[in-house]
Length: 224
Image (cartoon, rainbow, N blue to C red):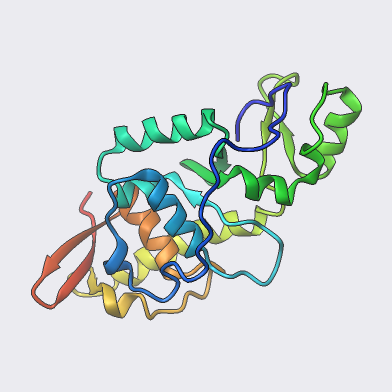
């Protein structure tokens, strides 16, 4: 989530290429590493799990980008450039750690049509946006606001529970590891998001690490 600006976005300087077949059935091992943040964002958007309940548009966690673009400074720099160019928007998530979600601005505006008209912001407009779940007040300053992603509440719980479930699954194994090809086939009980979504997050945040072996990629719990 980020501070509420007075002027609204009326479009983007760049248009992302829609590719409905981009990586939806490929293994994570086939597209784990990228050299360009925008390419990684597009692939991860295309791979966002199909969730039947709710109407949340695809989003990407910054930690997922860290798992795929090895230079974190590059990720931060390119995200800031794309944000300034109004290609995407960043949101601070309330999931117990320093989590940020990234959403393409077009997707966000498609979900929050209340933002599309622009113009001078009035108090009545702010009330409507808060009631719609588009804005939340900052506790430290009631005159400051954060942008929010409507209907994301259940998914925030899923992010936290999915992390715990995968760590628990690996921790119960003798060497706290599993072949990626086997782990990807697991179905999570505690999260509506798929294993691939959580693996990118856990690798990028440092909770898991990967090791290449002659038989394929192994996922291991990182040592404290």
